[in-house]
Image (cartoon, rainbow, N blue to C red):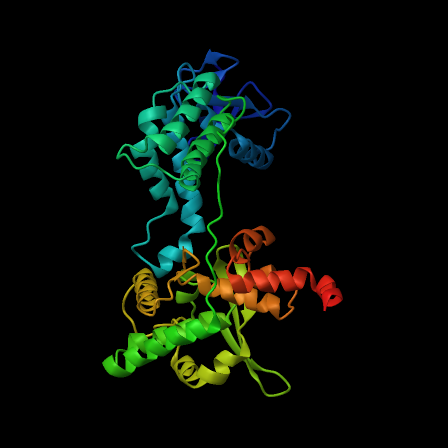
Length: 414
């Protein structure tokens, strides 16, 4: 073997070197104990390559880093002779955790107790999916396909390990986990293509909207409870619900975590104050919106007094609370539901109306005002609007839609 006359470590096992009897630079790095080249096992697990025609050190360093970065290391992380579903799942979840670590960074920032979606998925996998799929040879697509159909049928008819029969919407989440594990196998060259998913009847779960008079009853009761108890939370809750009524946003962490730096107060030429909000971390990315003018008109005094006292990083809602944001969110939800039920408003047309139904009302209200592209204003899609926010079947909505659809024909009948 030719003597190495120069070498440079580039991090980890990656290095470049120059041999005595060669004019060209070379590179090497460790892959895994399962590294194969043209079906021949490389027992030392090392990738070795001549960088011909490169002769300079700087150019060799650049090329070596490029090759190392693009090399499909994950393809050789498991034994290629027999690779189980669980071995691939382990690699898939490692990647999943890294993805959600970035995606959910802001949630952890506002809530130390926040549990990542990747961890929840891993728990589901360990409890229900691994016992069925774990030992399967993932390269045997026929067995994998048959097992997938049987597994879905079992969840829908017999149930989980605890005997809980799942809805098709819930089963879809299990299929999603199995799906990203299959994608990992495809990336590793172990599976030619995804298995066909069993047919599911996924149904929208529309929530009937509240009416303005109903929300007035709810917020009036919140204010009455504050006057009796003098508990500041109830006053903050009253104003927060009024904000949700007036803003094209979502209930929950998206608004509970609003800070002063996310908000701006501007004035138009008529002297009307505008509360403008830009939030970077929403369900679909960044979102900007202005709040309906009646919010500051009726509740601006309390809001602006608190807003002026806040520092940039202070929360504008439930500012003085030392509880975590997720704890506050849950307390808001429970109190809204409690009061709605107390007033016999929670059930409508046979369906529940949680706090998210306020958003449904806002979307429908804006549509009735003739505003275009309401789904964009509310930071959602046309499909979500159609399936969830605009699906109403109460008498008032039936009459409204009928009058709109047949407006011209009704004029003829008059």
